[in-house]
Image 1 (cartoon, each protein chain N blue to C red):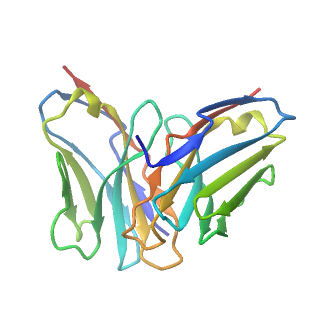
Image 2: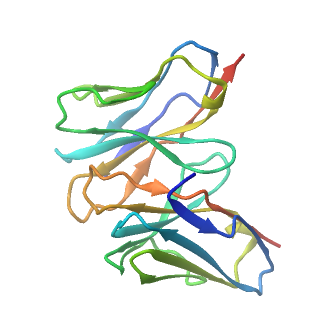
Length: 114
Length: 116
């Protein structure tokens, strides 16, 4: 079992729907990340939060909106997604942002856009 | 810019044998971290092992060891005594040493299939 918990595990939504992905960690980590991963490809970084502040937005379309309500929680709000947004969305956390601190990933949410 | 190269798209290994997964990297940072992750078909990304650029010894974690050759910029993963549960995709990744360098750069991945 991973120490980073993501819900839901699977999500099917229409292009006009609004939904949210949730991520939670209780390891006291101060950096949290969202990644998008297409099948048989490496993960692509979307957002980084450090000490609950957005540090990096990798030019992600505005239909993806991240939120970090507190140091343990990270949300990804979805609205008006496109079929090409169907992917595995992975949340990760790390103790800090030093290069020696590994990122620990959740199980991911498999998102399908109809 | 950092770049990670994994040249083996897929590998087959017999159960109980060892397998080496290749990884080369390119960076101008003197300080960096190298990581290996395992991703089974179920999707979770599992952290396996870490090697720091200034570490003198090769990292080991159970059946996993990292063959770090800094001059050649390679960080190969060795899995000893392969098990059926080792069948997965394996990613090599690197992170720079600067304090604001959050990005983990991944290689393309190697799919390992363990045969009984």
